[in-house]
Image (cartoon, rainbow, N blue to C red; front, side, top):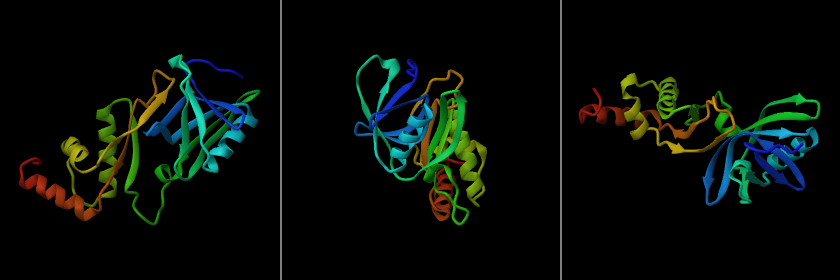
Length: 196
């Protein structure tokens, strides 16, 4: 199996797999995966995912760039398998994600989230819905843009998808402050006339 454009080619320890959807932080020339799919032979996908679960890094090449530039890719902490299935006689698809970003702990409110959509307005709307769901402070939908800029501390993530209709065009990591801080920021916004 040797897929070409528009996939990402992933290599590690002599194994090769491919990726057609990736969300990650790009720090100092290294990609820290948040969401990743692996496509390849069952043995190669299993070997590659095992290496990533152990915290090891792999090398990636963007097939559409036409260059030989290799970058390092790894998960920062705890990857989890979200989905795995056979897609062809000799190929499997495995979806992995950072467990801290996508799994929920019922005992405490998640203060960080990855939000993605086709455009920034939809990302802001989804982030607003998440904030509204975890907060007891009353909010208005027309505050979305202000909350995005002043409260959520968005950090743009690198995205790659080979699908034209992909929902993953824009992705951000957002942080939600503690309830007391949210209330203080909203009250200040109202008193200064930013919010009505």
